[in-house]
Length: 164
Image 1 (cartoon, rainbow, N blue to C red):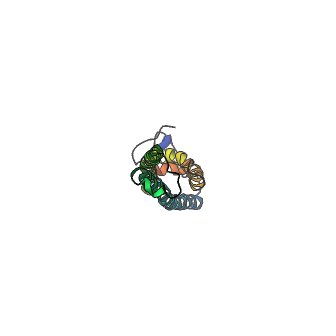
Image 2 (cartoon, rainbow, N blue to C red; image 1 turned 120 degrees about the vertical axis):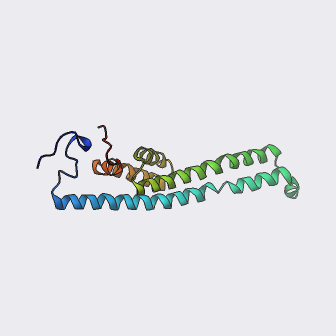
């Protein structure tokens, strides 16, 4: 059975070249890997969101230093107000950044489920590697799975040819 050149990917795809039984196995294995990756993206997004809220302690202590320095008078060492401002600024910067990072990981997991935005998922996998140790493991495995030719084809919308 010959297939005319110029179709999706210019001819036979990696999956189509396999025998029927192996083709079915490869598709189900890729689908299973993508499903697991999406679930783990949701878990890591939750962890990232939780960790991004830790600077709330800095915010509270910074506000105490600024607006209620008398709390520290018993020890005799009142911290300077600039330390309070530093802690507040630190928290105000890092909490939204962390929550945005968690939201992007969640979005990447959702895109993996829908088989959309391949490049976004791949870029997020690289960025996730900075979130040690969970993001590193998830990012590396996501990159490994997304680099498979059969998985790339799953992300390609029907009717659109992909340039190699």
